[in-house]
Length: 569
Image 1 (cartoon, rainbow, N blue to C red):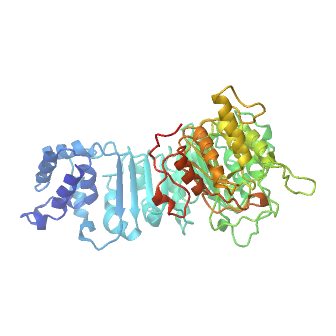
Image 2: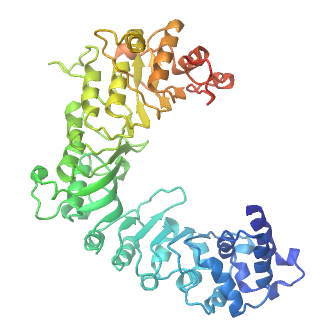
Image 3: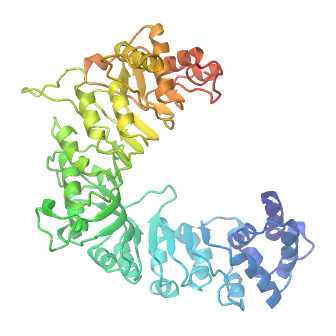
């Protein structure tokens, strides 16, 4: 079907080459490539395509418009590529749009819900501005508009016409082709404020900047909740001095210039003027009903003249626990820009005390802490600030921490200063049986493997071995990858580990490091049996999927074929 569509479109767009009819005899609608593509994506019959092609080679009658409408009425999303190119097929004349505006039907696209305009200002002005301002695509049914940030100023300059043609827009965003934001240019914030404040039903904004007027307007929306708010914020933002009281929002995305800015932004957005500065006393009904929080730390957003004050990382989760309902938050994602260097005290780290406020969020299904320069330290410290080298200390702390999140489906603790052991892995899998993705450093030694193997043998015979700490072993059928290495140098230690892994994570397909890792603990600096060697020996032993020799020649982490060996026992 798709091949037939392409052939038919060639007849439309190049009539001089493939048809005896002159170009002047073709209907103007044939020159709108996007329109034809959208229509014919919904035509599945080859004969109907040919019939419609013949129809478009003459002046359209009311019956022809009805045929066209039978297809356009299905269109829910339109993407307009307004790039300024030299291709003749993209140079559209205003008479094309005027021809379509003569349509006897009141609305050619009655179900159109979303429009996305990509390109640059020159291409937009030259070819598409008439289309956007004549009401062919902009209608009261439109609910979402996505505009390339390169043409934001030109697009918004059509206000108030755009807001009059589509008054019911609920979502507005502007990003560039690689889904990135940029600082607003001169005049854009004012245009953006005037536009958004005319849409009474606006619930989702992602446009690189917001103002106090926009935030106040969104809070007054008749909708009981907001869908998504993306807010880049630096420490000098004027709206940080206010309190807007967003009580219910599905997703909040913050791009902040430092840890000191994050608590201020959170309180300004989520608390109202009646809330006290000591918001820890807020009841569950008073706290904001936020479902997803996505925070990107990017110090390059901070004005150069302002030096960030040192702030400990525990402020992140402390302010979160004070402002957000513990029963609503299901997803937390923290990351930092690759080129960002957030200035923190030398001993700054995420320790047990910094992470403890997260224990209140028992409904979490996703927790991502992806901060490269700030380790997660779960073991205790002595009076001199030195790490407690006692085996199992960090595993016990990890087990206690994850026990508060039984609903977790995705967990990423990127920079564990002391890698989890096999006991730590078992604790996570036991407390979080729904996990489908686990990304944390795991390093095992033969002693723990032997204990786990004894537990398996005891369970298969008379019962578990007395005193075993791993009885019964957890089992997770969903996880396919682990960041796991072995402390042993002996290849004979691999087979017992492979057998344990097959019992615990039977769908495992690869073991290896997700990125470069440097441990501060000398015990874990050199793990001589890599995940790649573990996987090869495991497949030979028959406990894991068959090893591919082609994969073995690579230098990356281990990979197995999906074929399962029959000799597993």
